[in-house]
Image 1 (cartoon, rainbow, N blue to C red):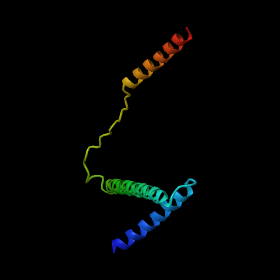
Image 2: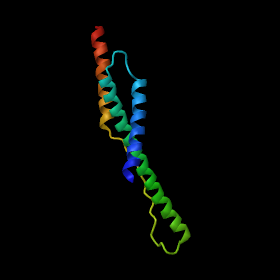
Image 3: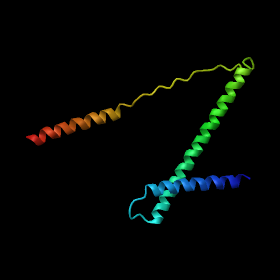
Length: 113
């Protein structure tokens, strides 16, 4: 019974992709090119939907876990640790940016002479 639903979802996605492809169609673009663009858009839509389903499943799991902890606080004796994420930028891109600016200004001064 899952396959008819999947086909319905796929045809709906295919129609959405084709309408987007037609909306962005360029003058002189062939039907084959439009069809290929629609296929790419369809794959993108399907990938997005898969990501959203995965996020929803993770959220449901988390909500169920929190709900269980609220209902039975004594049953769960796990130590909750707080993870701290620190983002650190690497120095190499900034160094390269500075060097490129220095080289550009040196070029400008050298070309004026």
